Length: 101
Picture 1 (cartoon, one colour):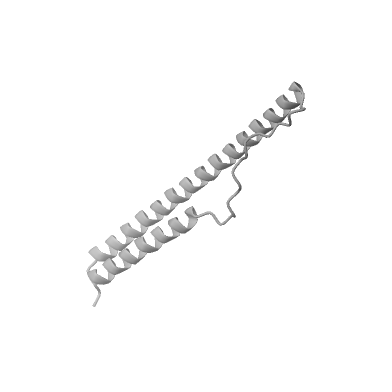
Picture 2 (cartoon, rainbow, N blue to C red; picture 1 turned 30 degrees about the vertical axis):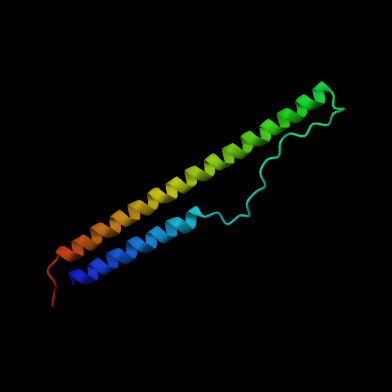
């Protein structure tokens, strides 16, 4: 009985690790890297400033989105760890109970 519980615990931990790894992999196609700002030579100072500000705003938006994704993934990892802890506790309870055989 203890061996069966140990095997079940190992399978549970392996499965949880696999799901965590799978969730951490992005399914989206990688976005192209942000190119350096290409300001035309004939652009006025105000046009160059506007292009620079747009670039900064786009980078801030991308950083905010990435921070949000990181927070979501950390929450998923915490939830998975709580589930593993609950399953481990339950398996330990079952292991400590005398078998009804």
